[in-house]
Image (cartoon, rainbow, N blue to C red; front, top):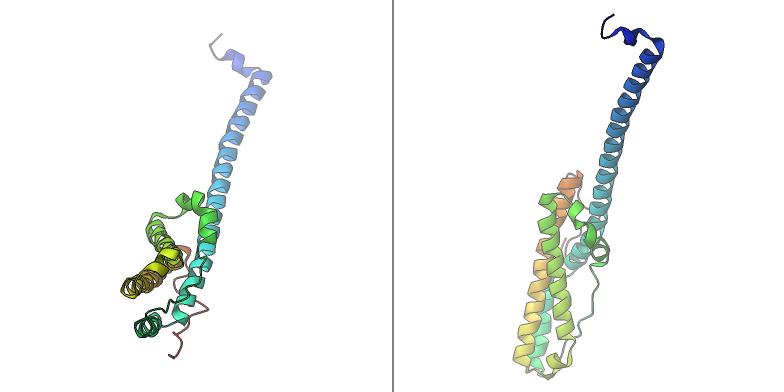
Length: 192
């Protein structure tokens, strides 16, 4: 009798076949689960990027509607003409989606994270200077200081526009939307 004689027993053969099928099932199931998780992750990345595109595009389009340099010239001229004139600067909210998704920023592809974070840091800088321009401290400054702060405000908005365009390019490249121009591309007012 050989060492493998007991393998001839049909019950042992059935157990071996069942074990092989169970093992193959585990391998196949594990592969399917990893594939499903990859697909969910890709969908999540796409969803996050699409939401960020919508939010950034809105602000970029809004900034393009105004000729920031002409607005700066007009406001500064009024400030120089009247030492008591203080421009009204409306508050803004351009980070709602980013704030909601900041915990998931790590899901973005590496080439997208830097331009997106850079853009939102600029948006936060604009928000901060708006708070300063609306403060009592600003009202108490002399007109030269107020003009300097207002100039910084416009420069920050111009930088936000440039960084927004860079972030949109990176996001659109990543999502495959690079070939499609924004449906809302506009020329600054007064230009065609």
